[in-house]
Amino acid sequence: MLADAHVSHNVVVPTARTEGLAPEVDAEPVTQPGLEAVPETRKRRRDLAVAGDRWIARVLRGGAVLSGGMFVVSLGLEALPSSEDVHVTIDLLRKGAASLLLVTPVARLAVAGALLGLKGEWRYTVIAAGVLGLLAIAVGAGIQA
Image (cartoon, rainbow, N blue to C red; front, side, top):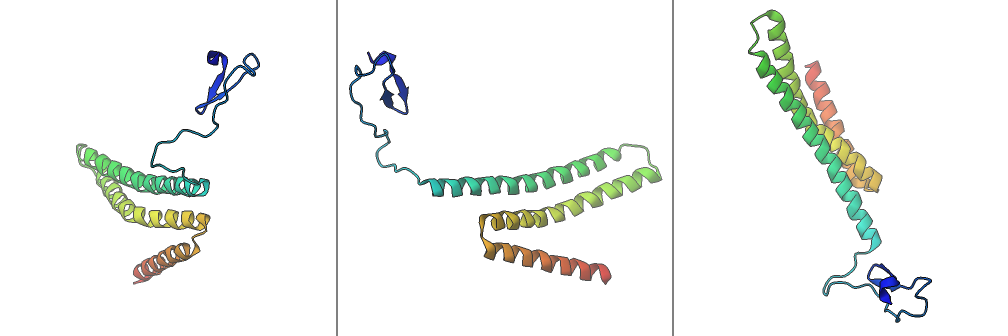
């Protein structure tokens, strides 16, 4: 008789054919002893935090991969016959890769600040913006010197 019933989340739900034939089943879900259910708000916050961590990881990984790729290409260009164009290209690739390595943590700070702002963590967003502002002032002062 129970074979004709739908089973959903460890609760037997009688179908039209077995209406009244299936014994009453306690509707309480089966859980492991010692484990409590996580409230939905905490679960949602954790999911948002994990998503934010993924974005930060993507920024850092992307910067490292692009920079490494530029260094590898510049090393590959060393095998070409010597010419002015090759030397200029190698120099540009290496300087670009080094610059990208320096800019990647700054981009991570910007992404983290934006994600914290979206979560409503305004104090940390202001701190991230302040650090980015100080970096901009330092770079501006360095360029003009």
